[in-house]
Image 1 (cartoon, one colour):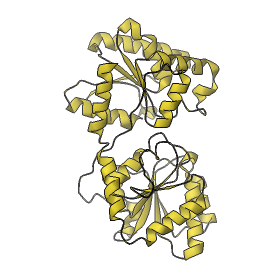
Image 2 (cartoon, rainbow, N blue to C red):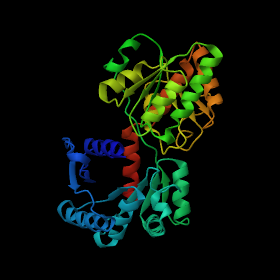
Image 3 (cartoon, rainbow, N blue to C red):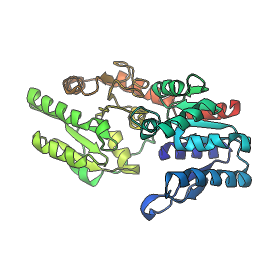
Length: 353
């Protein structure tokens, strides 16, 4: 979510607007980066009650200073609820965007009656509410009992520059060799355990197996590392760790194709990024991904949790000599969703809120 806010704020700044971001201070005394727009940091909350009261105070204080024309709250709760509470007092339109984790049934805010009631009230009374996938827009409509002024606005992507990038140290042996890539947080919902099962099936069927790079970090790393050992895939899987900037660019630029075996997503930024690099993506038939990939046209879709179907899709791509048509149409899809385009869609929404 922070990545999305940063991209939008930079575009607004470039378009002549003055974005101001209100955010929690980073954890663990992490160095605060220099940014081209104003950021108002508030301390990490001591309690839920303190958070609600303090953020409300900060918004009122900064409105006196900046005179906001609109407040865009990312997450329906607590951010959207706090902003909606003071909407009439500030006489400022409020827009809420859900990125998935706040409004899905598994969310802790949905599980608690008090926070769920507050979230539903905010979505029903806000000037406009957006979801980054059509499924999330549907959940907004459900929670607001059809009262929300709801919209589907996807995430965006940067079209990459044509430079080589820098190969990660863990991948130096791959220079000039084909490899598959998956990129993101190592969490259960990313479905990487299913991908490893598919790799095992592929190895049993064909004997030969392309190298898989798993780039990212997270709570599932230990379990995934053990699974790689148990399945006999040590020679076929490389954990690259977290990658950014030029290293991430090198991996996306040089991979043969991209894999996204997720169980759930909002709007998967890594899928969009891979498509912007003209890569064919094998993704799962879940919300967010199905709005980006047209099966067999600009990518490949498989059922989530289906390691056999994923195995077959990988083998088909490995055996396909010409991916040009899929690659071109993947890039065409990404080109229509630049951050500049997405920022303009939000600005249009602000003007009507």
